[in-house]
Amino acid sequence: MGVDRRAGQLLALLREADPRLVVGKTAADLSRPESSIAQSSLFTGATHEPQLYSELKKEIASADRIDMLVSFIKWSGLRLLMDELREFTENGGELRIITTSYMGATDVKAIEELWKLPNAKIKVSYNTKMTRLHAKAYIFYRNTGFTTTYVGSSNLSNVALTSGLEWNTKVTRRDLPETIDKITATFEYYWNDREFEYYDAGQKERLACALKAEKYFDANNAEVYTMDIMPYAYQQEILDRLEAERTIRGYTRNLVVAATGTGKTVISALDYKRFRRHNPDKPCRLLFVAQREEILKQSLYTFRAVLKDANFGEMFVGSYKPESINNLFISIQAFNS
Image (cartoon, rainbow, N blue to C red; front, side, top):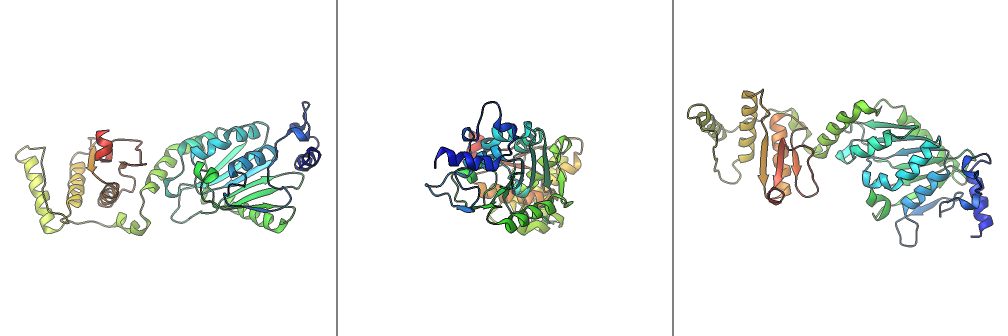
C-alpha cells in the first residue's frame, strides 16, 4: 500500500484538529492497524496474520474513546498495551473497562495500574455465581465514524494476545453498522447494571479476597460450604483421643496413622476446627504438606467445607503462589525448595 493511500486512511481515523496531527507530523507519520478500518476481518492466530496485541496498540493510538469488556485481566497481557493506554488517557482519551473476579484469574496489580490512569473508569462484578461474563470485546470509538471493535475469545492476557489459539473478529462500522450498534448498546447495558461496581482505592482488599475465593472455588460442590460435615463414629473416636492427649496428658505433638480411605483429611480438618474454636485469640496457623497438586486441591476443599469458609487457605504448588503463608497447602517439592 502506498504512502498516499495509507495517509488517506489515517486521516479517515483522525479529525483534522486532532493533536496527534500537529507538531510537524502528518497522517503518514502515524501508525495504523495492518487490517482494514473499513472492512471486517477474522483473526485466527495464523502466522501470516498480524498479532492481536500489535493491532490493539495501533487501534489505541487512533481512538477517541475506548471500551473494553473481558472476563479477566492479567498483568502479563496489560503491560503489552500499557504504554499506549497511558498516552491515550493522558491526552484526554476516555477509557472504560468491565471485568470480573471469575476463576480468580485477574491480577490485582493489573486493576490497580489501570485505576491509576487518568480518565480511566473500571467496573468489576464480584458475584460471578450470578454474573458469568465470558464475552470479550475491545471497542475503539472514532469521531470520524470509523469505529472498530474486536470480539472473540481473547481476554487481556499475554498468551491470549500473542500466541494462544484464539479467534477474534474485527467488526467495522463502515460495513457492519448494525452489529457495532448492538455491541456498543450491550456494553452500555452492562455498564449500567448494578452487578458491575465501580473500582476505587477502597476496593483493593475486597477484590483480592474475591479473587482468592474464586481461585479455588468448585462450582459443582458449592453447596458443601453451607452443610455441616459430621464425623463417623470411628473418626469421632480419633478426635476424642487427640483431645485427651492435649488436655489430659499435655501432649501437643500427635500422630494419626489410618488406612487409605478412612478420611484422614476430614479428621484433620475437624480437629483444626476444634483447635481454632478453643484458641480464638491465637493465629492458629496451618501447614498441610502433600506430594501432588490434586491431593492438595482436594484437601483445601475439605478444610473449606468443614470450616464453611470459601476463603480459607492457599496453595503453593505448580503455578499456585500464595500471598500469605498463614494457612498453607504446600507440595513436598515446594517445601524443600
